[in-house]
Length: 117
Image 1 (cartoon, rainbow, N blue to C red):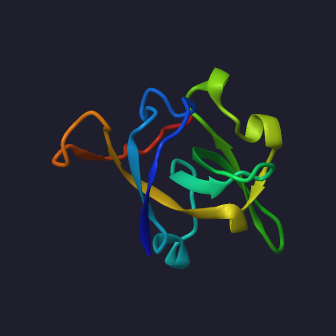
Image 2: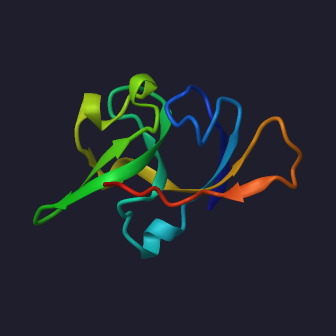
Image 3: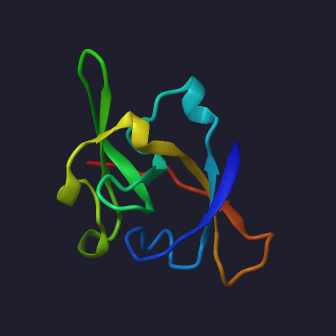
């Protein structure tokens, strides 16, 4: 239930750059709910592609949880500022590790929790 993805684009710069690798944990969200500050991989709600974003807000109605997701690079990110709230069902899992594409395999780093103000 783990997979890895190669970053494409600039929406999560400076943390993730194009060509970096991200490890996806699909198991965590079977037990725990996604929360504000998590970096997640999700299906883009309007296009046929996967995207990497931070959860910055959460709201719950009687039946569903909804999330507001944003990239770190506000000018170069397709995120909730353009497509709105997303349902829990399109979040594939939590992004755990990042490896710089220009470094060796010993240079994995744990993703830092994103603080929102």
